[in-house]
Image 1 (cartoon, helix red, strand yellow):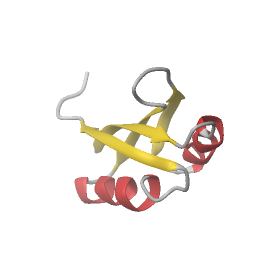
Image 2: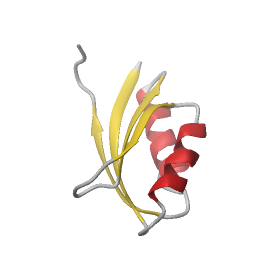
Image 3: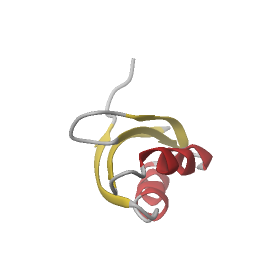
Image 4: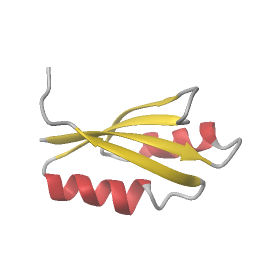
Length: 78
C-alpha cells in the first residue's frame, strides 16, 4: 500500500465545495480544510505507487478550482 499527503491550494471561496468533491474519491482516506499556506490537506492511499501517482495527477490535480498542490509521499508509517 502506498500513501501520500497532498496539500492543496484552491480558488478563493471554494474550499468547502472542493473538500466535498475530494471526499467522494475512493482513494481519499481523510481530507480537511486548513488555515495557513494550504487550504486543504488530503490523505491518499492506493495499492501501488503507480496508482497513487495516477490518483494525484488524474483525479486531484484536474479538479476544477484546484490552483496548486504539494505532494508528500509517505516513506514509513506508524
